Image 1: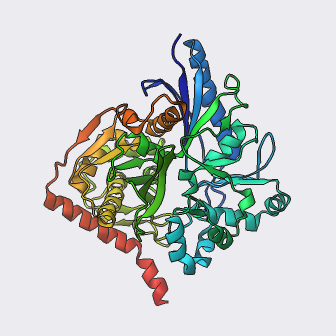
Image 2: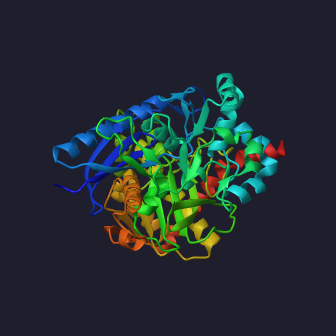
Image 3: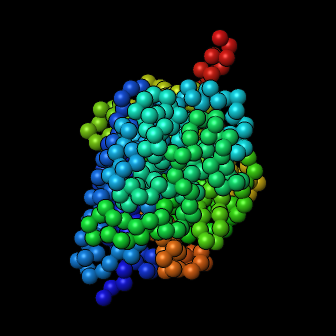
Length: 500
C-alpha cells in the first residue's frame, strides 16, 4: 500500500490550490479553483469569505478522491494563505462571517493609519511593520467602527477575528479552534516581534480586544483535527503559514541572507535572518516561520501591484483575456521604447511606503502603441522587485549574489531575463509553480516526523532555470534611472499637498 500524503492548501487572492505531497517531498497531484474580488467603491477590495471556504472544500475534496483512487491516506493537512486579509466571524460550529473579508489590497483603513501617524516609529519598532493600510489591524479597526453587529458580538464574546488561515482553521475544525501561526500574526501590526505575543500597546492603539484574537502557535505544529471534510475526519492540521513565508521555506535554502521573490497579484521579497533584524525604514521585519527548532526571521518588502498591474492594463485596453492577452501583446515588442508605467493606483509599497502616490504613464511619444504600454507594465514588475532588493542590500549590508523566484509570472521568460538584466545578477526560477503549498507541506512533514531537521528538508529542494544578465551594466543603470525618475513623478502630488 502506498505511503500516505500531506494535503497542502494554498489559499491565494485569485485562486485556491491544493497539492498531495509524498514522503519524498514531491507533489503527486494538484487541484485549483478560481476566486473573484469585489470592489464596492473606490479603494475598497473585498472577497466573499464563504466563497473562499467553498473553494478550499472543493480542491481538498479532489485531493481526497485522488488519494482514495491510489489506495493512500492523507496523514496531515497544511495551510498556506494570502496574508493581511481580514475576516470576522461568529463563534459557532459552522462559522458565519460578518460580511465579506477585507482584502489585503484594500485601502479603506487609510484614515485609521493617518490617525496613528504620530505613533509610526513605535508601531514599526514593536511590530516590524510601517503604519500602512496593508496591515490587518487597521482593517479590523475599521470593521469594528463600522459594523454594529460585530461590535455587539465582540461584547458578548461571540466574535472571532483572524486572517484567512484562522478562518479556514475554524471551518475545518467546526469552530472548535481559534488559532494562527507566528508568520500570520506578524503581519497584523498587533504582534510584538521581540516578545512573540500580541502586544497590549498595539491592541490599545488599534482598539482591538485581545479576547477576539486567535491563539498564536508555531507554524509547524498541530493546530487541531479536521471534522468538516468527508474523508478527512480526524486528520491533523499540522502546519499553517503565510503564503510568502511558505514560498521562502519551499525554496529550500535556509542560510541567513537567502533571498526569494514571489510574483503574484502583488509581490513579496524576503531575506532570511537568524535573529530579529534591526529596524529599517524601507522594509518590514517579520517572522519567517517557527517550529520546534525555534524562530526564523526575515526582512520583507511588499509590492502592492505587479500581476494585478498587468491585469489592469489589459482591462484598460479592453482585451478579452486581460492578463494573457496583455502578456502576449507585451511580447510582440522588444522593449517599451522608453515608455514608463508606475502602477501606484493603490499607492506604493516597499521601499517607498507612500499611500498617496498614484499611477503614472510617462515618457509618452506619438510612436507608442498599446504593445508598449503592455510591455511597460511587465517591465514595472522587474523594476519594483529591483527597488526592494537594492533596499535589502542597503539595510542588511549583505551583497545578494542571486535572486530565487517563484509564482505564476515567473513563467514569462522575457520578464525573468529582464529581471536579471535590471538586477545585474542571476535569477533562479523554481521548478515548482506551487511553491507556497509545497513549503507548507514540508513544514507539515516536520510536524509529522517525516523529516527530522531542516538539513533533511533542504535535500528535498529541486533545481530550477537560471537566467544570467545579458544587458550591459551601463544600459541597465540607465533604464533603472529612468524608472526612478518616473516613480518620483508619481509621488509629486505629495509635494503639492505639502505646499498647499
